Structure formats: C-alpha cells, structure tokens
Length: 102
Image (spheres, rainbow, N blue to C red):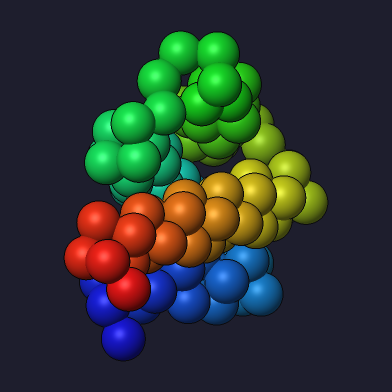
C-alpha cells in the first residue's frame, strides 16, 4: 500500500470510531486531509474552480471548529476527505500510466 492508500484507510477507520478520538486527533486528521487534497490537486494540475475548492474549504472549516462540531458532521467530513483523496489518487495514477505510455 502507498502512503495515500494508508491515509485513506486511516480516515475510514477514524470515521468508524469517531467517538474514540480526541478533538485534537479529529482536527489533525482533517487538517492532514486538506493538505493532502491540495497536494494531489497540484500533482493532477487542478487549481481554481475546477478543483472544487469548496470541499477542501468545508473540511478545513470543520477542522478549525472541531470543538463545536457534532460527531456526525466530523464523520461526514472524514468520509468526504477519503472520497476526494481516493478520486484524486485514481486520476493521478491514470495520468502517470499515460505518461509512461501504458
């Protein structure tokens, strides 16, 4: 497994066990998610409007307001983050295959 797929698995586990996590752990996972999304978007060359900045912004908002967020909202943010990262990884892998001529 790659670092990205390991992180996706970590996000999914956290979503399933959100009640066991501290506010700091939830916030840190979401902040890492936002950073990973931006990094992957850069690698795929998605910027601006087509990148769907609203999703990353929403996840970042949940991370910054974690103390007041219900666990249901945190679960949705974790699952959205995992979904976006997974989709970007698929696009990046396909892009790399095309560049290699496969």
